[in-house]
Amino acid sequence: HRILTGDLRVGHRQPRKGQSNMPRDLSIQDEARLIQVKDRAGVGLPFSRGLMATSILATGLGTEHAYRIAARIASVLQDRNSNEVDAEELTEIAGRMIRESAGDEHAKRYLAWRRAKRSGRPIVVCLGGSSGVGKSTIATRLALRLGVNRVVTTDAIREVLRTVIPPTVLPELHVSTYESVDGQGGSFGARFESYRRQARAVGAATSAVASRLVTEGRSALIEGVHLLPGELRADLAEKKPDAVVVEFLLILGDERLHLGHLTRRLHSEPGRQGARNLENLEMIRRIQDELRSMAEQAGVEEFDVASPEDLTQRIVDQVVHQIEDRAEAPSTS
Image 1 (tube, helix red, strand yellow):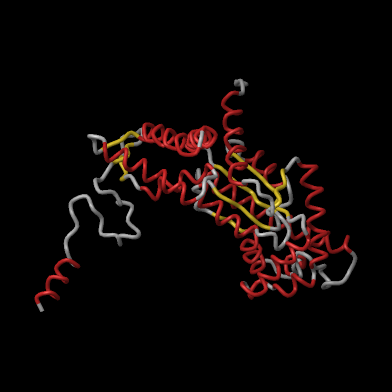
Image 2 (tube, rainbow, N blue to C red):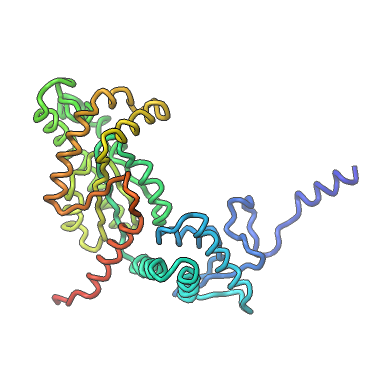
């Protein structure tokens, strides 16, 4: 009984001053000594190795490497004779640690990304592509790396539109992207035109959602088959010129890999019509070809998801270049 009582006392021990009552795995106060990070307004938030590591992921470094660097930064802060650190000084410390551990290129990208985030301009990342190339998976992972916690899928927007727009008004909205309004038959031209009309309807609603997020100053990652290359970017450029919009068309150049993606989806995501996608692979591939042509005309970069290149780095570099180019542009006033 004495052991049990002691265990209970330990289990119900009151937290020390400054500690939260959050579960340990969810708490951001994970340091031996609480370090407050002060922003420009003097508001302090507790330093967290986890959040620090997440911010480092935007450089393109792997998760384990980012956490090792974050641990070194935490150690530097613990060795100081202060319980506070200025946010800009913390950024400088992080840049130095990244440079020592991963090289100058990653350090420069980290510092540039932090400047971009501090600019206050909302960032909108658009990822289009045909069915089955891996847009949803990539979007989820990118959102974590970029620190963007709002992911908008055009499939979800289409489902909302289907509840308020009946098939008699817009029949294209109620079929799959690779079908014509009369079913799976018809020429490629008719089926692609059906897809284009569906994409335009969903795209208009997606643009409204993106505009609202930008108005609120919120960054977002938008992905889906309904993003016609260049259209959302052009719409936001007209309505919300302060937004930083980066767009990529995700593709799978190798048809065998595309087939493999759809086959895995058939087993891992049975609710996503995997069998029908496999039956219509040829149409899906032809839609991809059309999207690639549209992307080339609109000046939208394509990215083969089977490529060994780093998509995170390319997105971060584009965002940074847009912000720095705008800052360096002469004023017209």
